[in-house]
Length: 433
Image 1: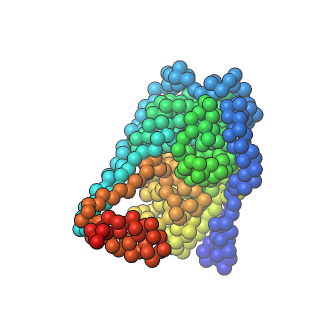
Image 2: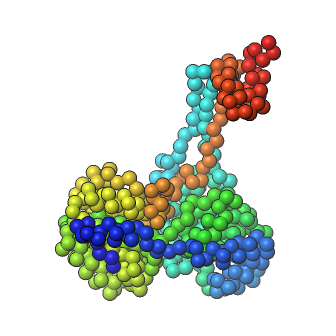
Image 3: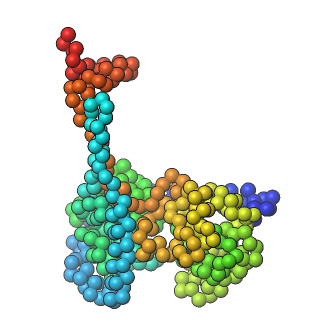
């Protein structure tokens, strides 16, 4: 793992290298993805069947069998242990409550000139949700993507999830039922994104595609953007933990590994002011890796991309965290709110020793679909706003037009747009004088 100390002369160069390190890039798959998208556009369901057989290791009998039936969903729900159903319900209730509180109000603003200015919010008609299904199954991702769409009022929610060997995780299907997903397709990869964007005989096109995936999915979303909206180009997961020596080193080690076990390209960074604590956490990471079921993935992530940064003080730590702009930020300090007020860039923050980021992955309530790769500098996590559109409107009376219209005529004339100017001038009181 990378070790940096702000006291070292080479820190600036080392930190810059950390910021610029490419953990995963979609550049190497762009041509392959473009070919898949073109094939789906040209051959529709036949292409979906061929790519599914080639990439997911199962050969559906026909296009109709790519859609998961109600009977399959019911069977999955019946096979789900009651304690998992209760956990899904708790998570869904908390996610729904938090996102319902985000819903905006329409505006209608009368102004002194006699016009009324407004803004109306309306939901998208159809949304496609991509749920990863490769190295792990993610029912939590179903809840986090589908529930905000349903809360926003989206009428149609279609979900694509890869089914390696033809098998789907029953809990993923149970989560889809709980979240209100109306269509489920056992399709993964770039071909799923292409089908959602362009449509086939089986799958009607959607207006926006959300949800994380591998490099092929990320590149496919990049390529279909413009045809449809997307939430973001998701990269490998990441966490930055600011922790002092009063913490249990094992707790911090587990928080770091909770991100590392997602993917070999994930990144976990500890920032601390105590060298002894840094060593204790590093030792605890190695100890946990000896028994962690996903140790091969987590260990590779930690060795290739993990980092421990020693700082002089917490003001310095806050400045570094801002430059890292992490997907997840944990502040395990006595007064986390005070330091959080000094940090502007993070996808989501978790305050205090008793709030591990993993809580936010499942049951806290705020969304776990978050900006990665330092994009928290300009992007935000998934919310109801991703499933809503704003439409502004203006209502003007003759008196209102008379009050502000002459200025519009003047400005249109200055821009050389005579039809614009005449459109307004023809309605003014002295138009026929």
